[in-house]
Image 1 (cartoon, helix red, strand yellow):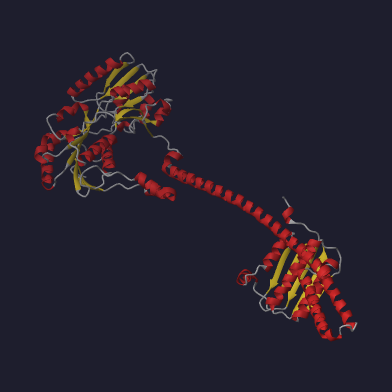
Image 2 (cartoon, rainbow, N blue to C red):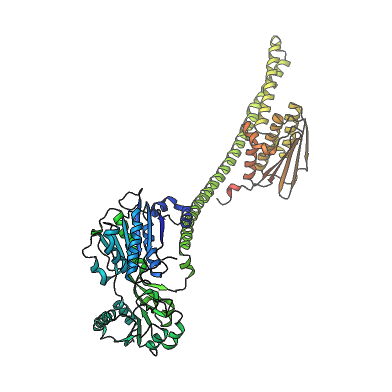
Length: 632
């Protein structure tokens, strides 16, 4: 693949994780949407497509380049509008001759004819140096945002306007500081390095001398210069070192061919020859040697810093008003396996450290889903608690209502019996006073007629006697309608038989039949009164609605209860429609009978079909057992 390749990435507004939102929407969708909505980038025309160029010093397949690019894109995704992001790779790590830069200039000048970039991001030293040299001829007055540039190269931006960015500083001193803290028994720091060019080696020695002045009282510094970048040279430099030493790899060494990863697969050899903890100044060493860790420049955070500056410039800020970021982009990295090997607890590490190769727990791996499910469970738990509380309140209300209903039933039963007693009192007065007075008056009138003392008024006296006879009959009928004297004198069975003959058969011409097993056990007066009233209501209903030609009443006693059935050969009805029938006729007869029976722990059974008549069975205890008295 060509080193001068380019790619275009269209970045639209970032979306929110749909899988998480879908779970959270179960409870509070609108709340979450308001919380998770990304802010619109400040300023700028979000409807316009913005043109941005990223110029990398190295090739596209280096880890550093990929990580920087990830950092840039993670920030630019937040832009509300669209960004057309062009990316160029200079590949100056592999190709270093001056003619390469001339070829790059010619290529980019050709591409710049049809491009008008608003911002250019440069990554690492070579890209920044190249663009500062050729900007006026390639992209005049276009702002530059750099990242991954060494702090020692910062002076090159002096005299250039519209330039800002993020630098990375030397990490040797903070790495030594954390290594001495984690290995307090160490007495020696071994710096392993390889630099081909003499001038760079001189600069490095001078820098190490300055570091030695700072840490010389805590440990002895030993420099091991490799004669050549080979595994054999590296092993010789660290051979025999124990835990009283700390090894620091100063850079990524490359051979004559430019291959930087010459120590790949040297783990076993290093482990055999060196027992000392090894630290490094660049993250690329992880995976190529047994590195404990170190404070290192984060390529991803460098990219993020550049992306943030791009958003600010697109939002209307001037590049010269945005200060160069000189700190905060370096991070402590550690290898979990090496920490475990040297017995270093995670609590000993600097705050914010990143742990590589750490086994992922179930919670860490599915943290987002677990939190989402936990949120839903918590919300559902709250709902269940609220519903349970509501159900509990309803149950308590139902219990109170049932208590009220029971007391109302008891009151209705008492009123019913009081009414019956009042009827009985009225009947007694009608019979003992009015009835006796009427009979006595009739007898006296008959004696007067027989005496022939008032022959001329005999016709009128006979009329008065006839009127008295009718009044006596009406009084007796009223007496039976109010309360049957037979019920109190002869009992329930006799009263039902008398009422069947006198009221049903004689008055309405319906054939009646009554069966009973005899007096047997005596009924309580209140039970007897209630049963008689119930049977009488059923018989009246038959007369009114059944169109029956025959009625049969059967009374049986046994096992402490009485069973009375009332059967007719009338039109019958559909039991399922009983409620609607009663509502249409505004009747509560069967309902009131059922309620009265339940009050004494009896029950009512109905069997009927259209055209096949009806049979209603009443069951009640022989002795009164009032439900209303229970638990009162």
